[in-house]
Image 1 (tube, rainbow, N blue to C red):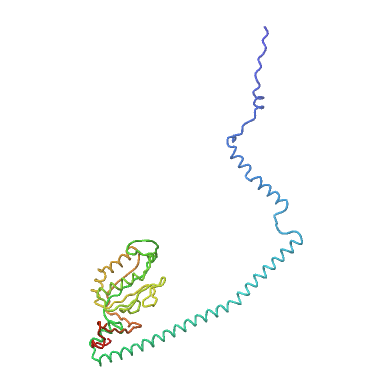
Image 2: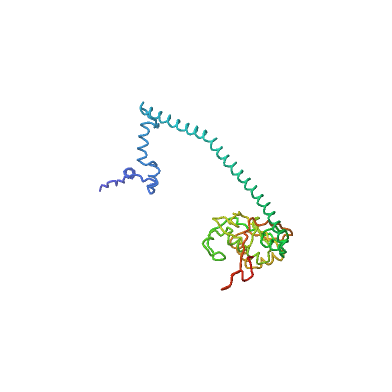
Length: 312
């Protein structure tokens, strides 16, 4: 029996027919990104730009002429603008200096008038005191003091109230309940009213705010962000001087409701305040006083002449 030799398969040929698998076949997306990092559209645009050149300057004579004319016009406009600004600068400086000189001149004139008013007021006050003495009116000096018609000197307290370092906006029911107090870090006219009234009720004999003497007819109001005392605007910090027994006045004010109100403003809203007893304070006279008179109202069927009372 003839035995045919068994043929073994050619493994090398089989392996040559089967394509080899890439090691990074499982990362096709990452491979595609790495091999095609530039989008086809970008690549096409870059190719066109390479064909036409990188320069965008016009190549035709007409385009070059248009560009030159545009550059010349831009240079003319810039030059004219600079020349006009240089010519106008001295004029503006002169006008500004004129305004400054006018303000300084008017301020000096106002100061001179104020000095004349103070001198005339002192003269009128002296004549009034002499007239009252001649008429035998008792307590004329005390009446003048209480009315704020004369300057006063004596011991007392010095209270300085200032806005918070960083004024904050916000609500709050205590102690401010009005919508006018949205900026709680600023000292308002109502705050100064309470401070002044608290000093009066604590025993102060005379009070001034930033050198402005207060009387029984003085008013503390607001105009925008400014505080007005007798229609004179004041700026912070507000220095309040009060004549009286310094230590007793300071203690009485801080223990009062108005003193506690100021303390609440310090604690809750950052308003700054300091009070100290002073051995000597000087308060000026009130800048203007209105002389008022009153007469008794006669009863029914009786005239003023019949009452035997005249005008006071």
